Image (cartoon, rainbow, N blue to C red; front, top):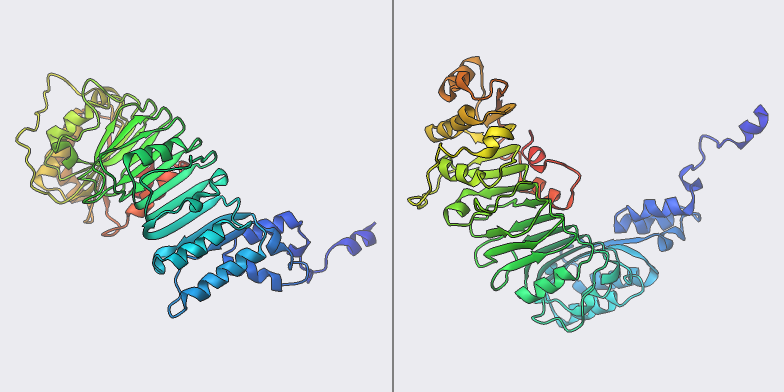
Length: 440
């Protein structure tokens, strides 16, 4: 028996990977970059047919200088003609080569090919051209789509249908309010939506029975109002950029738990999400951007979230704003979340000026069930500086004697970035995206 076992065992120099089943090898090839996947045909006779049977990832992510456009298009056409499909991902940033009738002709031939008939992931930038209908001809199989730098038609003649699409990103595109509504209503399995720099007339209204996450960004001359109209499954609204020009209104989101980082400038301009008559009892995590001068505005804003458990305050440079009409906090009407639910407060970019101290001291003295307050600043804290901060904040008189007060040194000028928060729009695996984004 020992001799038989020894004879059947592979020799040390044997190619064990090539012994794997075709299905597993095909999966390995499909995870490689396009160029490396094609090169596996040269490994051995065993590998030669596998590339054509493995799902194709066709990523053209970088532009090669001094290479004619026709050469690149010919290479893409050759790959598509030699590979029968299916295609897992097709990514082509057309903005590198500009928009023309020739480019549209190439795109039309590619999207009508057998290889792209059942594409699952699409990333296309169309260089301010009018998005042609054939780009979405494989809509029935799409799972992930990112469409950038283009104009949607003012009217959609043929009905759109995206039965499997779960993740949709729209970057620097323009469309009418009616086309946007038609697009979203055609996504029957949509779970996450990221709109960045979208241009549209009027406001954009979102209604979806399946949507769980929305990310939004705006800029001058872009959309000014986003209305979350009817989203029964929505859990988070993430705003990774400063959105001083964007109004966000929530009409119905009965499962909303995470919001921010919200700009206090929006509240000064009358852009609050809720009113005292329309509180969001489900919200658990909130992030705000503040200069430290808007304490009363923040406190009145918090009345809309009576069950809030975690608050992140990101201090930033002060900008002059008209806050003459700012409603004052009324101590005779306590804020519910400070009385019964708020467990953690984090102050980011804390420099310890008078306004920030006053801002933070209020929570130290009035949040009755806090477990922890964190301050992260730009300097090193030793025992003496911490004791001085404790004195200014009146820590000995804190409302919650169980609350731990911690001071941390900032790890760098920009050690947290908007890209880290962007990924949590589509990745819902992290319960508190602000904690990871702020590296706490």
